Image (cartoon, rainbow, N blue to C red; front, side):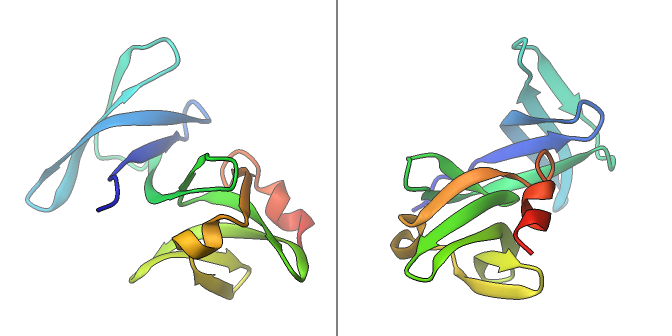
Length: 129
């Protein structure tokens, strides 16, 4: 069973924050408890000022946890390709533009290296086009 873990992109602070706890009520997001860089608890009401990103359960070739929204380089036989990790109905996929590479799985994650994320480094996806 994979570890269920989240991180959060806070639009107001323009940074990614580690999530400690997520609460749901009647199948709706109720609260998110985070620790910021000063180790203070932050509570986010259900507003559109943040983006919750789920951990894929996999790590890149350097042992770094891969979350949805991460930008990765695929180091394959055909050269380096830059992809975005995205969640779809059946799992986590690598995406470039409208093209889906494949489901992110333990057999493909060994060839991935995280180089950024879509919120802090969107230019990395533009450079790969």
